Length: 361
Ligand SMILES: Cc1cc2nc3c(=O)[nH]c(=O)nc-3n(C[C@H](O)[C@H](O)[C@H](O)COP(=O)(O)OP(=O)(O)OC[C@H]3O[C@@H](n4cnc5c(N)ncnc54)[C@H](O)[C@@H]3O)c2cc1C
Image (cartoon, rainbow, N blue to C red):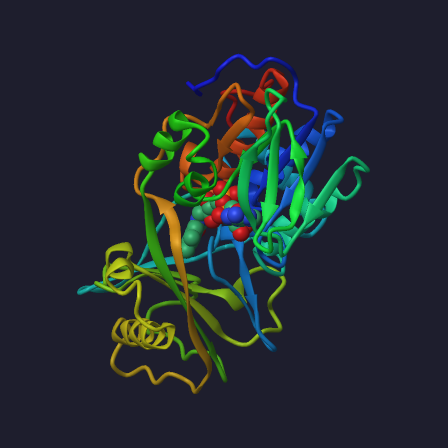
């Protein structure tokens, strides 16, 4: 059960820190009920761990590679995004590679991806917010400090990293990964700070490679989109150009590293990590496969990639108007992040979760 403290009043002016899935869901839920919402993200655009890298010829998903839909509320959202062409089913033919070779992984999970990139989803969700006059969004804006104003019971002043004032709010929702959330509000709320400390985050390197020409076929493999590996460095290879809306793009792969390996390599230069992940991928291919020339090779470090263990609550908030939600609360999936934000929004409004416990059919 989510930890709740009774609030004195419905929020009126809410700051949401983070425009990933959870922050966007929370902002939308509040905005629909007429609440004034100001959304901040330190990045140039929305996305967070749904980020995609746009290169001259290819788009690479660096965070979430695909996602599943289980909950009826999330299913409704995905259907609307599908109708807009921003999401599509990704066949995602999965293989596993072991000493015995490549074997098809059969599961009946329907997987989705953003079209033409994962971050198209969060961009559309941010666009939907612009329809509300009472919502403001600020990108390229890192919230550096949070200060409790004297006089008011629940008033918070936010400041940016150039010491610029970002406004005063009765409620502040923080969706940043727990270590970053704790740095912001730790001195103001010991209970929430402890909850953040208890949610350790794992790191993950995400390599990427763009090729000049398509990869040669692998013997006995008709089509592959993802490859699960038990290599010490590499855990997942994902073919970006087979995702929806990217048919015209050259062959490109995302190379997600093992978490233990990522943590050992955390402070190594990105070039070195990229080369190691590429070498790991090569080692998984049959010896006779000759790889095409590389156009670009790189790696992105997610210092805070995922919670080491899923939380038992969907969100947390305190009566003084501080709230936490996001990936570390409900679970480490795109759907969980969105549900965490939405459920927090409804809890702040004291609205019932009308579809609670329903699952998608
Ligand atoms: C490598 C990787 C692979 C993954 N693969 C999958 C997958 O295949 N399927 C799946 O379902 N899920 C996957 N996930 C998980 C999924 O991406 C996350 O659960 C989800 O995107 C988290 O959303 P969020 O809103 O909770 O957090 P985030 O997306 O991290 O959003 C938090 C936002 O807060 C912003 N922020 C932080 N601090 C500040 C500050 N001080 N001021 C302003 N802004 C700030 C950040 O810029 C960020 O945009 C993956 C994640 C990673 C990292």
